[in-house]
Image (cartoon, rainbow, N blue to C red; front, top):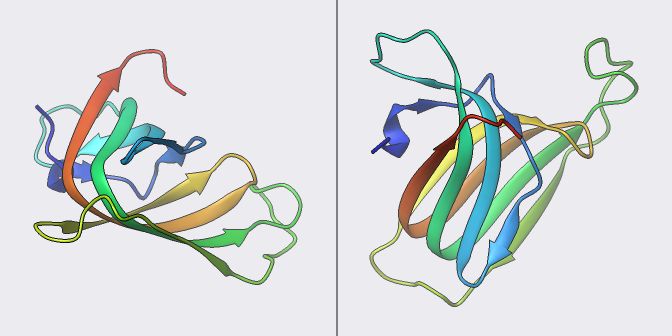
Length: 122
């Protein structure tokens, strides 16, 4: 079982997030495991269970993200859910979002977390 605190997300690529009931599922690739002997990244789904809140700061690239012509003004997307109010924890992570091409800083308040590893990527 991979714990949230062992995932290094700064180099990650984040896919389209999906709300499934009270759970938020975020496909992610190029995550690294802190304290691991492996230098190989992992891919899978970040599953936040019984989400109370999701807040993303989004900074979209102008032009090609590999050599951007700049950045658009940052904006925040916030979703409040009534699924959980007590016994929650904040999970913070960041990475490159595919569509739209943007740098994301994300905070999810949820009761639990699970990482479901896959080998297919996103």
